Length: 252
Picture (cartoon, rainbow, N blue to C red):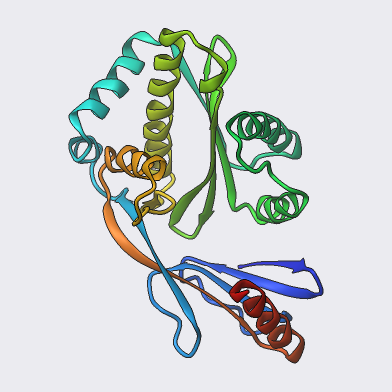
């Protein structure tokens, strides 16, 4: 559970069915990615893919697509990549990641990490819920990943590469392989530290061609399609009023 202030209320963010501490002094509870719907509250269901990290390394490889296995093995044998994992990232580590990510997001037309996002991420870091990973070549970062980790589950928050910065087809292919290799190294590391579930961060159920390509990438690693639930509710008068106002705003 992570507690932070959002606007005028104190919010307890509860991930992965971890439960709310009974003495929590908060106004609002935000349930994130629960495997079960929350009784008595409005639930928003969504889909994701989950890889079972309790499987053997050989089986984790075997459930991947043949193309994925080939790309990962090629990266291992010929690309001279190095892996960096930050289990407890420092503020400087986080700043390095944000600088890389925001450059990527601006180039791709995505939202950069906002001031509110910084506050949430710093709360995660203080509670040891963030792991950062990076793949480098000759000391230069090619791809960064950021994960939220709680209990025995992990979920990607951000992924960034500078793939679009070059028209060199060989470099673009290298970055693509490096990203797949980094996901594989992350899975091995998380398995090593005894995490059980690698949640791929969502599954698009619509017709957006870009998001469907992302689905295909995630699917290449295997994983089982799973329903997860989000819910948000007030537990004090202030929290209930704020939550009702927020729901009314989103219905406009």
